[in-house]
Structure formats: C-alpha cells, structure tokens
Image 1: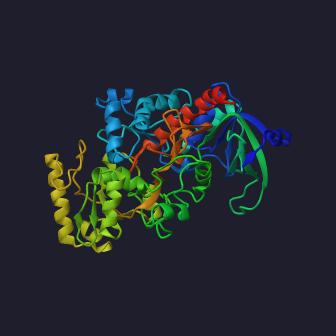
Image 2: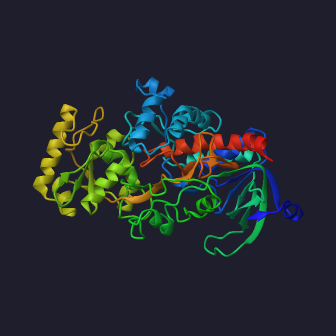
Image 3: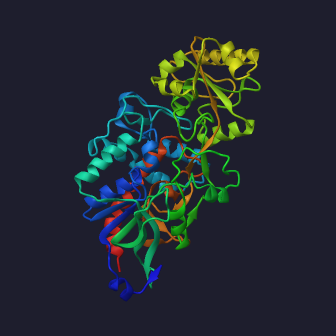
Length: 480
C-alpha cells in the first residue's frame, strides 16, 4: 500500500517503534534481542496466541563447527569443513557468501545462547546425515522449547513487547517506495481468520521478516513443486504458511529457490505431524541401525546420507520402509525411546522372525541383510553404501529388536526471499530494499537444494542476530 507523506502524518498511529520484528521463533527473537542491545526500541509481532512457531517443536539441535567441546573430545572440525558439507548437501545451489557467514558465526551464536541466554545443552555431540564429523549439540529436553524459553526470559528482561494475535498483512510505503510500516490484523484468531481489526504500525528504522517457512501451505508449496499435494503430510504446525513471503515478493523482493522443499526422511506415516518417531529413526536407526525395503528385506541406501538423498531413496521405493535397531543400538545412542514405544510408533519384538512377520518382510533376506551389516561393523566399512560406521557401533543381534515404518513428510523450505550477508532483503536486481531485513526459514540461498540436520537453528540464530543489529543500525543510517 502506497501512502503520501501527508496521509501518513495525518493518520492515527497505533504504535511507533524503531524496529518491528515479524515472527517470534528463533530468528525473530534473536533479531529482537540484538536490535534492543543495539539501542533501538523494538516490538515483536506474533500471529498466534503463543510464541515460538515451528521453533518450539524442533528437537533443539544446533550444528556448530570448531567448538571448544569438540576440541575437548578430540573431534577435528573447522569452519571450512562445515562450509564444504553445507555446499555439498545443497548441491551448490547455496549462495556461498551466506554459507560463509553462517560458518564464520556459528560458534559465536552457540556461545551466545549459553553465556548470554543461559541455554543448557546435553553433554553429547552427535553426527547427523551429511555432516563429516560430530558437531551437533542438542538442548536439554531435546526440544527447541528449551531455547525459546530462555530467549523469552531475555525478551522479558529487556522489556521487549510481544504483540500476540497480530497477523502481518502488508507493507506501508511512501510515494517514493520507502517502507515505513505495515498493516496488521490485531486480534487475529487462527480458527476465525476474519476476526480482528486492521491497524497500522510504523518502524522508524527497520523491519525484520522472520515468519518461517511455508511447509503447511499446500497451495503455495504445490505451486512450487506439484508433487507436494495434500496427500503428503508435513511436520510443520498448520500455521506455517506463505502469506508474508508472498507480500514481500509482491513488493519486488527477490525469490530464491522456492521449489527447493525438504522432506524429512525420519518421519512415520503412523503418526501425524513431526511426532515422536524421529527420536528413534534419526538418533538410533540412522546412526546405528538399518533401513530396509519390506518387499525385499534389503537395505537400499546410506542411512546417514543427507536428508534429500535419503528422502529421494525412500520415495524411489514407492512405499513406507522399515527402520530396524536392537537394544544395544538404543543403549549406544544414549537416547530414550520410551515415548516412541508408548505411542506405538516404534514396536518391540523378541525375535527377528516376529519383526519380519509384523512387516511382511522375507525373513531369510532380512537375516542375510543383518548378517552382512554386522560383518561390516566388524571391518569398520559399509560394503554396500559406504555408510560411516560409528565408533563402538554394536552389532544388531540381541533382543529386544525395535522397528518403525518410515515415509517422508514435508519438513523445511530451503527457498524464500533473497538476502545478503547483512540480512538485507534484496530486490530482483540484487539491490538491498531499504529498511527491510529477513532471517530464518523465510529466506532462501543459505541451504541450497537440501539443508543438513541441525543447521536450521544455527541459521536462525546467526542471521537473526545480524538482522536485528543491522535493522537498528543500518536501518537508522539509510532512513530518508
């Protein structure tokens, strides 16, 4: 919406802030905190009744290269290796400057969460598919909610207001195109989307878009990739939609890789949404167990491959497959699967024969597959798919045996609005749009064709901090 200067000045202003942040997940809260620390007055808008978005239901994993904890455990890692892993997983669709920025600032963001926010992490360091070494830390409680809780406490301490049930509608611009604020729906109700009143908010310095991805927006995601119809479930909350992204694209922002949508290969068709199954599949099966095609009883992939490779492999089979591990694998992983068992997503068996019968797997073929994999554990090299054999990996041989059906779900949208390494939103000619910044899943170019596990939180924190600080500082300098 374009307004004349007189029109803007004559309107009743609901509220005025230096920086307005749209979204209250990892990226949005990081931006708000850093903008306030940079001397700006800040407001956070959240369309739902509570903060956190998809961030609060994540597993709380953050990828950090060249950390002090890795050095203490004699894990050799570097920013350069992290950069190379991300580029390779992204099939080099990534924008190198963004990946460099992420790699260079990941450790600082991690330390910030510990020393400034007080986020507690588990002692262990994990390796997930596509990473060359163990570099993934998990917040205590195995949930992003642990991080969000500490961020909200800091927001409260800094007296940053969060306006709940405030849905972003459109930007307000002067006749010369400068963005000066936004129109929002105050009192928004997800169950009654027409409820609420339309009001205007104004930003003196900058606006940070941190509205997340569009994994639950079937119409928008299917427009990017026709395969992603309503028959494919998503791990996202139902409000992970594209309206804010569509608005920023409407005013001329650069679209980047919108068709690059990641599927989560660790999901189960036996539960809705993200569920609890990934605690078994990603932390136990992919690291120490095997995945087989129930029709053949054979493995068909490297279970520790990146998410795109593994999801594509599952889809090529054409039906749900079965992840298998035993008690020794669970114990070696150090993770509890009690929730998975209680919900019935993971099932326990006294013998391989009973497991095979449950999933209609040819027993002789399955036994041969397990025998060959156990031999590879002994030699330390996967003879079929070059899966990394982790140190002290146990053989799959003693009951109870555990299994879970696997089928991909829409999980993360790598595509979004174009930004530069200062988190400034770019127009279609690659020039920064004054006063407009973005961070997190709403942006494109960081992860390319496929995001590595645990890199999303790193991305949100690094670019959220950058966006918030620059909205307060660069936004102030460029204001006309």
